[in-house]
Length: 240
Image 1 (cartoon, helix red, strand yellow):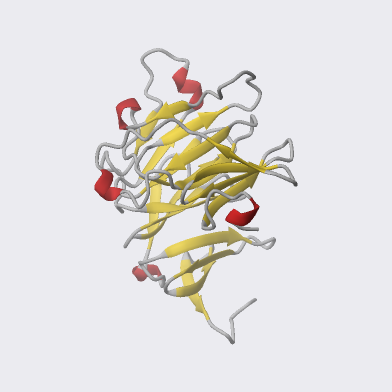
Image 2 (cartoon, rainbow, N blue to C red):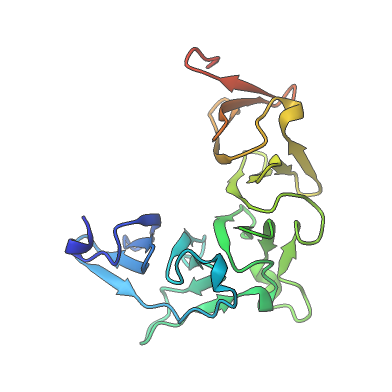
């Protein structure tokens, strides 16, 4: 399926399927849905990005997430976060827009993950990691965004590839810093000193035995919780 079939652009960078079965697609030229038959372009509000030099495209959708309440979050290149509730009826569609003016550390959002507590972990291109607590929005005087990198708690300008393990710990990658693990209280950084490449971790997962696997530009690594060491994995393994 291509633009000939109704896609707004052929380069698809993100997608998710809503609980209603509707497929949401993020492209270089905006957002669209697919119901199994027809592509429908979704018009987001016009870009309000101040610095267009950091944008690849003012219409590029960088990430999509459906949260546990069925609400949809979209990152747009250099233009922050958008929140849409499919349960709301009426036309036109209404989107809640979050930018640096609302506490977001950086308008270039690159990654999203909702944790088991309903909080939103946000990775950005230039200001690292932020944590958004929806429950704080309703509490007057409470800060909804906690900006770990911008506030000097951790390092690493570009961040993403979030994962929550079986213990509720949050893992994420940070540019030139390897990976971080957050146990709910403090951050632990893993990098070259632990046997891991410091650059370009782009994916991670935990297997059924509780082993962690990390993939990136430096290859594949396996993490041993007992020793807190990383082992490079090649064609010959080790796999066990």
